[in-house]
Image 1 (cartoon, rainbow, N blue to C red):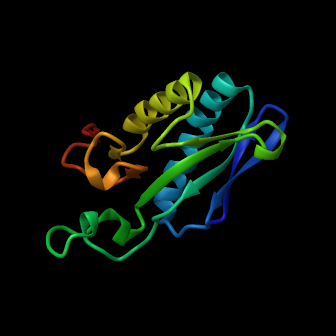
Image 2 (tube, rainbow, N blue to C red; image 1 turned 135 degrees about the horizontal axis):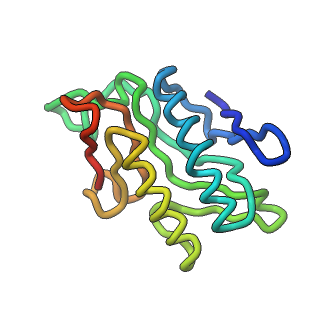
Length: 156
């Protein structure tokens, strides 16, 4: 996937994935809804600009959780997970902002990331980021791993 369309106030917009990533159709749908319903409004509210790009790394990759040699298979192995390293709001060349998950620059970026992380807990079955464990210290991991109860979430 190279980009997702969203509803903007003045017509359709696009969020680019850099680099392009492979994820399942179900994951793409969930990410699209989350961006449209929550992340775009948060970007507009915090920065007065649209989210334009996600710096990602890790969509489909056949491996075990946390790159371990044993244990359960990661949701990345099914294409149902995405790792986000940064959010780009507006055009960086004309006053836009790059919000790095690992190290936000200032109070506004910190509040934006906290809001995004909280919203991810409702949109995805799993949401892990800095502070959860060392494997997720520099990015936001989201996935749609089915749980015993559709209402249960794993959010750290």
